[in-house]
Image (cartoon, rainbow, N blue to C red; front, side, top):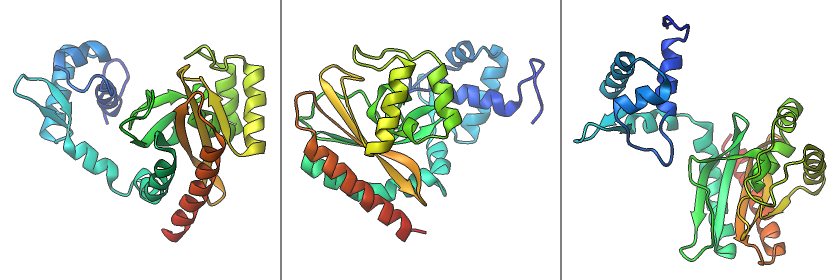
Length: 249
């Protein structure tokens, strides 16, 4: 697609517009989108109008826009995430029946943990994770598993970057994080108390397809809860997901 005077392509500009929507910011005006993207107002309004006509955005009666159903529809067609979610969900439900807190499925995406699914009990404890939400790799149990088994180049980039403290217990020392990642690869799971919230413990295991780690399956427990039953349930569920993925080939 043609470049603008600033050098970015139309595709770049469309992605910038769509990226302004977050879990907490689901509705915006075209003017707000222009401010957040840095695009000229005329360009932002034109792109928003084109996306509305294509069904990728929708406009409400107050002239605000949100992500459209067609975007969701297109994203699911042939999606590897959909295949993974379909394979994982029955086994996640099995974990949730045992744990009765929070059970989550995440993948590595742009050096963050992207959450595809979450099951929660009504009386479960604290958990900031949302479906389609992201967390730093170094500061969540799922992220730690994904980082431990990621391509070495990805690990080195994360280890070389500033490691922001999300909570008092987040590992922010690169040397300590490197040792923790090596331990995760040896043990095949991680127990991460307080890495996101002081009152919670995250536990995660890898999920493999063709021998490659493609996801992390995790639970979030109260800080003082026993961890052994959760580890056993997660490892069993991961094996079940891997079997389901093989059957879907």
